[in-house]
Length: 359
Ligand code: TRP
Ligand code: SF4
Image 1 (cartoon, rainbow, N blue to C red):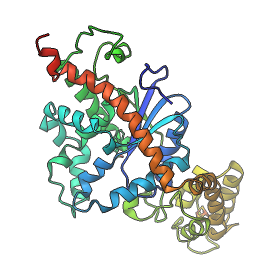
Image 2 (cartoon, rainbow, N blue to C red):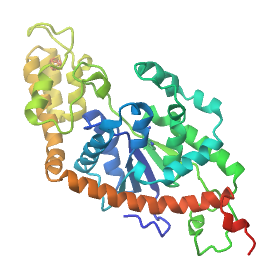
Image 3 (spheres, rainbow, N blue to C red):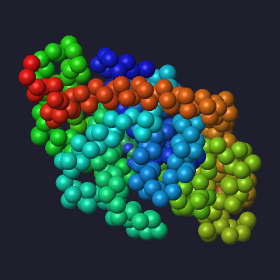
Image 4 (cartoon, helix red, strand yellow):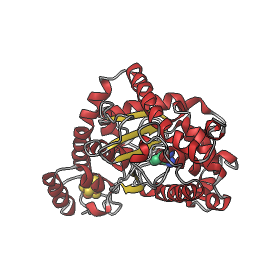
C-alpha cells in the first residue's frame, strides 16, 4: 500500500472505469487482467468514475450507485487487492472537482471539440441529449482524475489514448502558466516536490493495454451496448447457454461442411482462452469437419469456465457491505494523496491567501 506521506519508490499507475454495471470478459481482457498484474510492479490507484457516468446519464442517475457496487465487486473478484492498491470512488474525492475546475479555466474549447470520441459519441448516443457543458468537458475531468495523482503511467486501451494525450497537453499548458512555487520549506508541505522537482503536474505516459480480439456472442466486438457480453459473474449454465447461441464460421452451415477457426468468433475465443492442445484439436477438427460446432463450443465454454472459476469464487466471498467499506477506506487514502497535489496546485496558481497576506 503506497504511503501518501512518503515519495513512492515504485512508479505510480492510475486508471479507472465508468460504473457501467457488472463487468464482462471484454472489460477483463482489455483492462482488469492487466491492472491485476500491474500491482506487482507499480503503486496503483484504480477508481470508479461515477462523475463520468453522470456526463451521459444525468437524466436518470438511478443506476450509478448500484452499478458502482457491482464494478467494485468485480474489481475485487478479478484480483485488485486493497492491501496493495488504492481502490477508490471518484466522487468521494472532492479534489477531482477542484482540479477539474482549475483545468477548465485553461482548456481551449477547440481542443475539446476536436477530441475524436466527442462527435462520435454525440452520434452514437443520439437518443441522449449530450449537448451539455459537462459532456464537452469530459476529457478535462479525465485529465483532472489523472493529474491529481501525479502518476507516471496511465494504463488504458487504445480507445482512451487520445484522452491521455489531451491530459498531457493540459499538463504542459498548466506548467507553463503556473511554474512550481519555490519551496521555502522543502521538508514540509511541499515534500512531494522532491519527487517531481520541475513541474507541479508532470506529464504521464500512456501504458497501452494490449487487448486481444474478443468477440461477443453475435461476432461483433464484445460490448455492453451490443448486448452480446459474457459477464465475469455469469454462472456456468449461463456461460454454456450463451456459447450455444454464439455465431460461427458462416461457411459452416451443415455438420459436414468444413470450417475455419480463423473466420469464426468461437475460434477467436479459443485463441484467447484455450490451451494449445485444445487449439490444435479445434483447428484439425473444424477444418476436416471431424468435430461439430456444438462440441467445439462446449470446449470453448470449458475454457471460459476455468478462467471465471477463481473470479467467481472471490466474488462469492465478498459481500456488498465489504466492497463498500473497502471503497470508503480507499477513497480516504486517495483523498490524502490528492490533497498533496492540490496544495501544490493552489500554491502554483496563487490561490492561497496566506501566501500573499502580510506576515
Ligand atoms: N474515460 C474512461 C472510460 O470511459 C474512464 C476514465 C475516467 C479514466 N477517468 C479516467 C481512465 C482516468 C483512466 C484514467 O473508460
Ligand atoms: Fe467455429 Fe468451432 Fe464450428 Fe469451427 S467447429 S466453425 S471453430 S465453432
